[in-house]
Image (cartoon, rainbow, N blue to C red; front, top):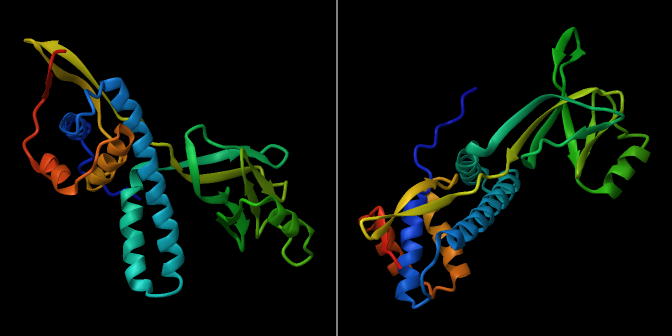
Length: 242
C-alpha cells in the first residue's frame, strides 16, 4: 500500500527569513544559523508532538461523539504524519524482549509474525500497554492472561512481549523527525543560503513552526506581521555580511 505523497514540506528558507526579519524588527538582534537550527529542531519536535496528541484526541473522539467529523480530522492528521510512518518486520524477540528501532518515537501498532490460524497464516494484533501495573494485572488474570491468540506487549525502553514463546513481531511506528537546518556563505558582500534541509512537517504547519521559534527568540508576536512575511516574496539573499 502506497503512502500519500505530501507535495510540500515547510520551507526552512521561508521560516528562517521570517524569523530573521521579525527579530530585527523587534530589536532582538541577528539570529545566527546555528541558533536558528537549534530553535528549529526544538520547534519541529514541539509541533510534531502536538500533531500526535491531536491525533490521539481525534481517535478517541471518533469512537464517541460526532464520529464523522472526528474521523475526517483523524484522517487529515494521519496523512500529515504519513512521512514519519515506518514498519520494522520480523523483529526478533529473545526471552520475551524485542528491541525498539533506533529511530522509533511512538508505536502505532504491533503484530505477531504470521501465525497459523484456521489453516491460514494470519498476523495477530498485539495489545499495547504502557503501564507496568496494568501489565501485572493482565499477567495475574485468569480471564485475560496473554496467549498466542491474544498477545500483549509492554512498551517502555524495550518491548516486552507476552506470551514469551513469540519469536518475531512486526512494529509499525512513527519515527523521529530529521532535524531541519540552514547554512550561509558569503557571496558578493552578502551572506546567502548555501545549504539547507527543509522541515519534515507539511507546509500547512509553517505558521505553527514560526510561532514556536519566535517564542524561543523572544519576538513579540503579531499574527498579521507574521502572515505578511510568510506571504511576501522570498529571497535567497538573507542579510548583509556583518
